[in-house]
Image 1 (cartoon, helix red, strand yellow):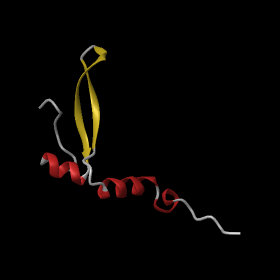
Image 2: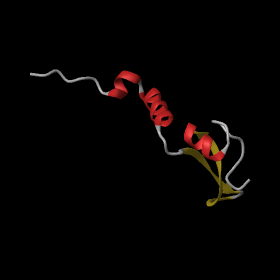
Image 3: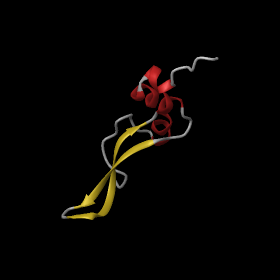
Length: 72
């Protein structure tokens, strides 16, 4: 009987696995945070950048942790 191998996430840890996937992806990936209208939490008005993977950094010409929003 074959012994099962530990999952990649168990070997690397979830944060390290996510970082490896973001770094290896040829697709630009942006983590964004929603911005809602003042006093109207149901009205979405913008998104702020949280983090960009290397492909998104190259495409947008922005750093890994950009300051600003999509509308700026």
